[in-house]
Length: 202
Ligand code: URA
Image 1 (cartoon, helix red, strand yellow):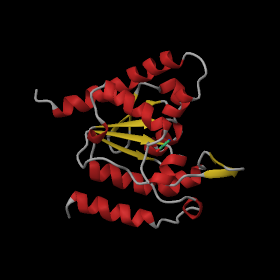
Image 2 (tube, helix red, strand yellow):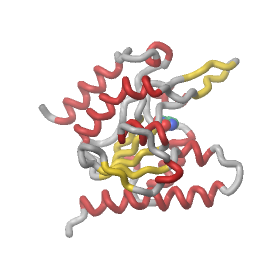
Image 3 (tube, rainbow, N blue to C red):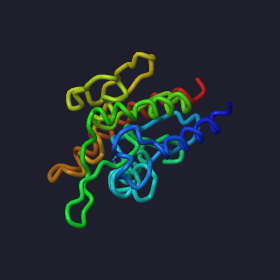
């Protein structure tokens, strides 16, 4: 079966997923976005408020920071496959606000087969784990993101995963945000270089 067809079927199946309680409360499943054969795959934690409303990954403030970084590295958004470890927004309603809640490990585990299917279909040359939920799902074990940021880890299937911070962690900083951004960009540059090597002629 053609890969675009398989991915479309997976997306349709995930739209009705109720394998954990999150699907009962979120507005919709937020599936990954990007071309089949994208060299770079970025994996976040879970959709946020904007993503839940719009049904697209990384379209809120964290996504804008991600777009800025990858534009700077020469990767426009339409060349990337962008997805999340967890496909539904986990929220807590406080007054009129819908606050983000970190997904439980059992929720990330229930979602893992969707992420693994995306990896299989897209077959990227490099995967970037944005934050600890993504790193844990991708590696199948907890990862100390601050200690291992900027490093490549190898999965059991041989795929390499670059570990770095989630863009929301940068947005939460009150001081030295630009400096932290430059360090983050330096992490992401490793993944960009590997993905570029895999496409450029020798
Ligand atoms: N944070 C994430 O991890 N993913 C999104 O899609 C948006 C914010």
